[in-house]
Amino acid sequence: MQEALQKKALAYDKAGEEHYNVISAFIKSMRGSDPDAALYWLMRMLEAGEDPLFIARRMIILAAEDIGNADPQALQVAVAAKDALHFVGLPEGRIPLAQAVTYLATAPKSNASYKAMLAAAKDVEEKGALPVPLHLRNAPTALMEKLGYGKDYRYAHNFPDHIVEQQHLPDALKGKKYYAPSDSGYEKTIQERLKNWEEKKRGGKS
Image (cartoon, rainbow, N blue to C red; front, side, top):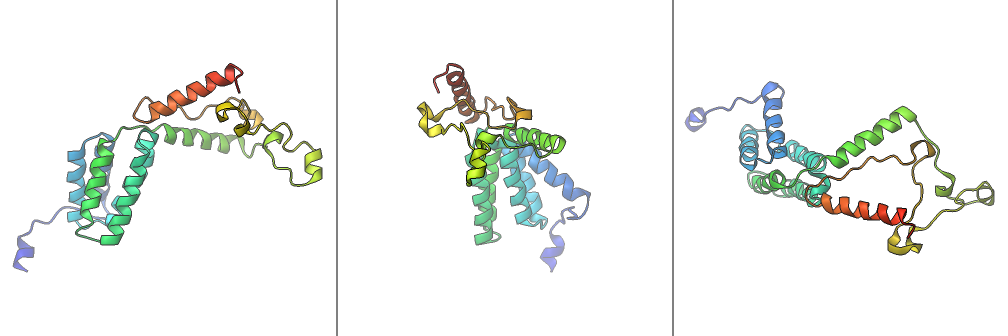
């Protein structure tokens, strides 16, 4: 009891302002590629009694939102840390959390997939349920086939490099681009791949 009284209490109300201030600082430190600050805020939360699974959930969200395809492994690391924490519990569960925090903080960053998701969601909300192009529809019945379902569909595996010039979006969104990969990390490879595919399509090689 004497030791407990001597231990300095940390200002942290899990239902109050400080809770949101600290988790905000934690997320922004990882997003800002500062592993030292991220570790400090992690330990602040754990020492104050924060639910470690809440922290792990926030790390998983950050891995997908702020790192994305710049380092696809980041999401796997975050999920693995959550599973490890759940398996071993505290206090040892702090170790995989700390490993994941340092990985996420030092990973290349991109929010391109997150921005693409928001843009696609906006079109869904504003334009409603646009019809699927006929050539992309299944034709399980003779009537559907007669109506043109699946007609002129181009099976990608039948073309060189599995690349085919074909409309996959609804007519009202033809040519729309949502995903613009950044130059960061692995996403630069994706960017170059998509550019190469576009050149092949324009060249009529597919």
